[in-house]
Amino acid sequence: MATYLLLFLCGIVAYVISTLSGGGGALLLLPIVSFALGANAVAPVINLGNMIGRPARLILFWKDIKWDLVVYYVPSAILGAVLGANIFIQLDASAIQLLLGIFLIFLALQYRWGKVKKTFQVKKWYFIPLGFLVLLISSLFGATGAILNPFYLNYGLVKEELIATKTANSFFAGIFQIGSYAYLGALSSDLWLYGIFIGIGAIIGNVIGKKALQGISDKLFIQLVLLVTLISGIVMIYKSFIT
Image (cartoon, rainbow, N blue to C red; front, top):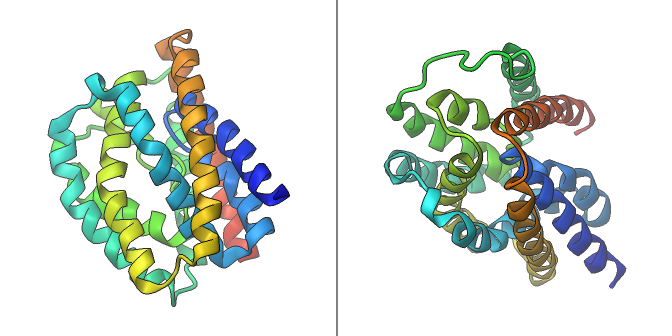
């Protein structure tokens, strides 16, 4: 019972942070889930918790979703989710984590703590390959941190629009991701229950984060996004050496 309570409380904290920083809060769950349940449970349990928490966030941010980006992102993301779940059961992908960590740190430093508004041009079609890559990576590691955040920021989305569009993209692709885990036997009945407790915590964290988000400026939001991006990169590099 202590494990369920721990995951529930960590789910709340992680998703308050995730809402305020545009994503990446799930990274906080990586070491906790790994320690409590084992490394093999990390990706399916965290992604299940994410999936359960997303409908609440969708409802909270529905009016801010940019559906034109969703149309570009989701089809390729579904393919990435299914392929990633298949690879998950047989691949050690620590080298990918190392490269992604370096990439995230590079992106975060480019913004110079929010003083630079845009660092590169992002076109709508970029979200087609991004959808595939991000869901492939998410299916392998359980959390992609803030990989997409710089692309959303450079496209011009901040605060509610960024969170809403990112959540819609993740939700529709996540249906196929969790379905693939279940079909391949990566989610046992125990892991379902652990994921549900994280998800319930995520719902509460989303509600708290939504209220807190209204009190911060666009500049502070961007700085929080960059901080989480930087931390995400450091965590991924660290994990690449210990896995």
